[in-house]
Image (cartoon, rainbow, N blue to C red):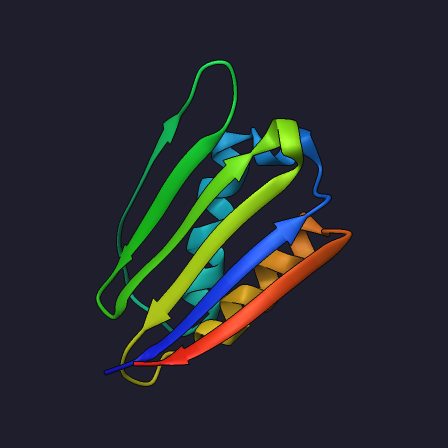
Length: 108
């Protein structure tokens, strides 16, 4: 069915993890670089902090959930077809610059 990457980031900038516009641009750019087709990107900002955002793709989705107070984020990059979600993960890692991360892959 597709390629599914589960990415956990630790030790990221709490400012970036709470910047809704930055995260929306980040996951859209990750999707485009992966060769996916963006349908719609939506988000929700929690009070007092934290964001959930999802980029809906023709090929599936990229989502991010952040905990700025803990400097953590959880990301799903799942695509079918010829898109390469690993490229999106690499972009997200580079832009959020975590102290540590864990990347798991599931062939679905």
